[in-house]
Length: 273
Image (cartoon, rainbow, N blue to C red; front, side):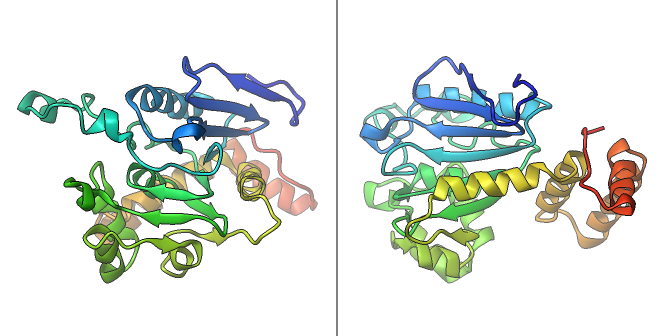
């Protein structure tokens, strides 16, 4: 774990150099690190990435995560040499761990802020769709080119994209291979922020993650859980679950600290209890 100094940075060993992870104060940064291959996804990389997600989720000192790619791309998708060379079989289809699965382990409770520069294609877009808040640089590009290779945007690509942007725009990407610029992605709600020239996308994402981390962690995690469940639950059931969570949060130390800090005109000091 990190020490008391919020500026101290710890490097986490993930067992591979294709994914890097650091923790600075309450924010973890996870970086895809195959810049020579535009961070294309391999089994080794995805194994390290799953380990990073699990580590971030389990550590109490981590309250928010920044996710990015090294070099000039966020992620160009699956490494074609490795992905398409795998033989197909029923056994492989039925095994949840046999394939390159970009979103495996990404269902963590804590908010994930993406920082995107350059290409975000294929499996890279699948990863992006499972994040919560998304910053893009002016050079960011988004596409699902898979049908041009005789395959499709799997591992949640066809499902999440249709839920997150307008139908016709999603279909143009999925079926037509249409590419979105950063401005297009912002217009259609695929990304939440576009960072202007001269500013660092990664710095902007980290600053945002720090601001999230300053908020009550239990309330933040509960909010993320409920918001994601809203896609699947009937409204009445979602509101009932929301009411239950509100009651549970009212009895936490963080809720008492938040009220006390507001009354005393100071910043709250949340402990996640």
